[in-house]
Length: 440
Image (cartoon, rainbow, N blue to C red; front, side, top):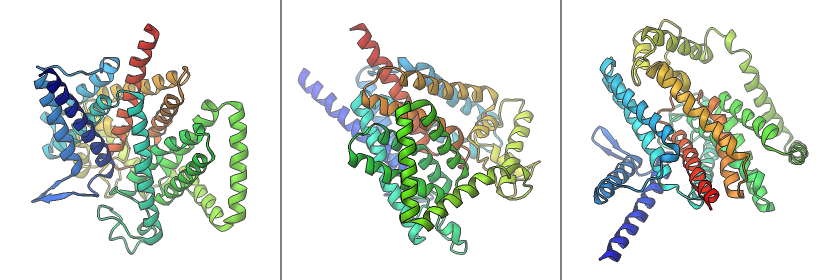
């Protein structure tokens, strides 16, 4: 009888683990594959898996008489903030002019928080963390393949917002992969660079180095093709932190030599293509110096959106206009020029305007303390797999500070929740695992 109970628990665990990996995959691929239309609603694979796994987890808790073996105590303050954020978002419904927008964003916040909780729950050991890292790389390869196909053919998947832009040739050949917006794909690429940097940094075999360089080059080429300046700047920040703070002197010298030789090689073999790449980089970087001089165009609209968010923050007495409702306020009355844009295109001001100063400062503490803890761990004695994961997460989160101002809104952008979940799962693992080692 006891053995049969144990067998059922083991089977349930592996079923939940399998559903978790499917949830991760569908969180990134979104509605691209296997989406079903049920009347006016879309039944997305991610929603099916996330609610199914939640139901089974709750069922498991009931079977265990309200107990579930969780090891959240090492990161409880991070999770407490997420709970407070969600509760506050629900409270803001009381003063939300658009209940529909508020409920939609509350759902996205709920789904993102669930992703974080599940990631911590099922990434318990270094093997699980390694598998997550490998899965991200595998998914990236698939998305890069789709992106190259889009750039070369001008065709897109059915979910892409680039469809129908035949007249605008430049936009027609911009990649969006499995995302609706090109900027969302660019943000994914920006967050993925550190995964590749760590691969190149710590993998010793030549074939791994070659694979990493191909992956890095393709990632960089598609990032330029998206035209996302924010993610290009995020990449530069990631490289700066990696080179000046995470590489030893010998590796700095090797990196400079290897980069110089690679550029010379590309100039000799592909001179025109390489010059075009440098020209595009120059245009993107130069545009940053002209942003605040513009009175029309997308840059001026983005500045207007930021001004609007501050305006409505003040008029809400610092409590925020309520979940997702900054769009409603801008649509109905915009004191500053935004043309047709409603989304803030700035994650930081989106939180500030919608949820107010208290949640905003709580989020800043959540974000910067996570980076600080990863920074401290990176300087500890780690095995090779721990080092790879810690460095990846540290750089990705640092790059996120700038990459997050590219997309129209990140609340529904699930890769960001996965990165935070991955980081918290690693922090939780490290604190539990290394506290056991100290006791021994």
